[in-house]
Length: 452
Image 1 (cartoon, rainbow, N blue to C red):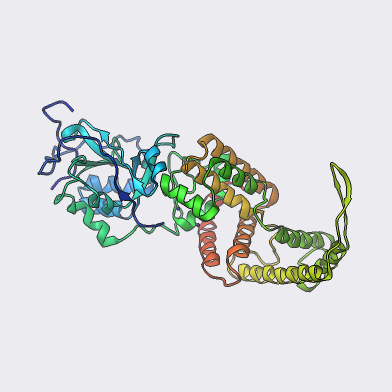
Image 2: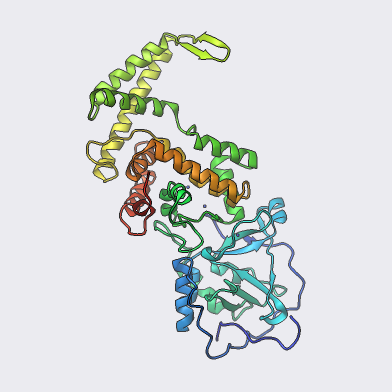
């Protein structure tokens, strides 16, 4: 069986993740699928244009397999990666648990109707009313109905395109690898767009601030035109992890992260206090002295203080003895946790000897770089807004830190203080693996983009 383009007919003609979506909803009327697969293509297809560059390693592997006529390798590549297909946005908004597919027209296939699917590097830039869902290769065989198009077109119009018969039993030839290989497993890996994504400049710098998460999830670090887990997947991500369901909520949370207001003020107090001591005395700060100084500052503040505001000078009420002791003990525990995390990060190569974390603003800024893209994928914001936010995150990071390594240490510490509970579990080890990749692989943005 051949899977190249069929001959012309004689008559007229767009994830911190879940099971594949359920296929339901209206379909475009059309003739039933033919009982036989499309006729074989001409014996020799013309070579692709010399100027074409495969956007990612996925499209490169598809093109290589197609040119060799190795359809087994072609289908294995599809099965190892997620595929995207267009859906009706209004219907998806009304019933997110269902998928309303939009089929297209292709005069090269029987009946003129085709189901276009795309690999990640071939997706068009996000548009307000054009959205895509994401699924695995086997999904397309499982949900096919007789009223659906008879042909699936992979990456239509590109040199790596292929035409697959969508009806059983012929669909089994390309669907079986998905069952054999299981769900796609992409992370941890450094992946980038070779074309269609910035590799240098201010946008690339801001995107690289989110590279730890991208590497951990195996997503494209420089994909500004973000589709992520698909339209419904990105909306689910923001709702379940962040409680975001509207544009206003997304914009508010993005600004909070860009202003570095998304982390604990107590963390900032402890780290800023140590940095001040280090400036005064030089070198590493003894943990015991750090705790004693923090206690003195907290006890002094507990006696009440004056605050200057637009309404004038006001005096803050003093804390009770119970409140004071609780604050003191909490900060002493926090300082101990920070010191132990830093010791582990030095052992694992994230922090150099005699270095410490100056702030955890990287934790907010790295998430801001991703939040901008998540909001674009969920269509809460535009490409222009997302790009401006990414640039802003990169600029603030460059003001706060001296290097990518310093930035990484701040991000890892913030993530662990928030999630890890000093277990040194996945919340920590995932970032160690991503950090090592970004600090060692030749194509890493951290090795190719100046931090300042």
